[in-house]
Length: 340
Image 1 (cartoon, one colour):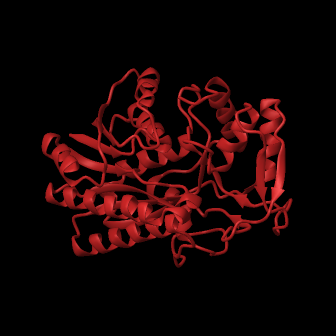
Image 2: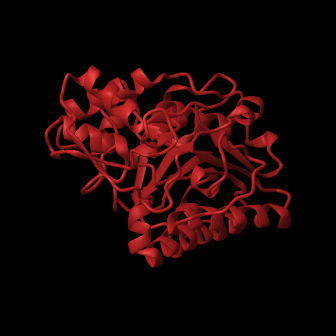
């Protein structure tokens, strides 16, 4: 049997591939891994790095998840048992500028994938969702809260969630883990793979790391007048390896999930922007110049998870602390100053 991972050369996808290859237990037989990615925000260098870490190879196919014929051909060729679906655009700011691209790639692409899966009777799915579906709810955020979205990126995740819940209601054979995760940071401890965004980073940690390594001049901190410990926004940062292991746990426990289940993956702790900056300065020994900019529309003061359900249902909880997250980020960036 084979496991298909869409977007598998991306940041979270590549770390999940590593964990799948190294954390498989005796109770979970190894599966052949097939990665499909269009390489729009990743590089095939990742495949070489993953092989360095695991001493194992994976099958890679360059294809767009929106391309029905290409995805159908993969299912025709391989005996696929389950899918982990990462493929999707993910930048909030860009989604405001290019909403049609986001709706096409994230929503239409997922519908295409689901159609092919259904036609091949493959009904096990782990979906990469996001805490953005909680809208402006007050933290700690739990899975029973009402959902909403404040930007096109969040809307695409929410739309896909609705599709998945409707699909599972229509056919009881589906088992779907809809993983709502918070703010992934960090890198593999080897320093071989990490977050490698194209262009100017949209997320805080790669931006801070690129300032520290000299690729960017200074950081912009959006707002310092929130009702938080130091006035800057607070988020739930989770180590990408903890997150990857959450996907492995979800995959291993799909048989226990009837229908579609939303599950938070977070630490349950909040950290402010300036706490991140100061910890990064301490670990890297580099100055992180920054300037305060106005708040961004739609940004909340504090966002963090209640992750009790993941522990209860999957036996998963985050174990790596902030120091480790930033230490691993700096190792990756300092050893790969220009990325891959």
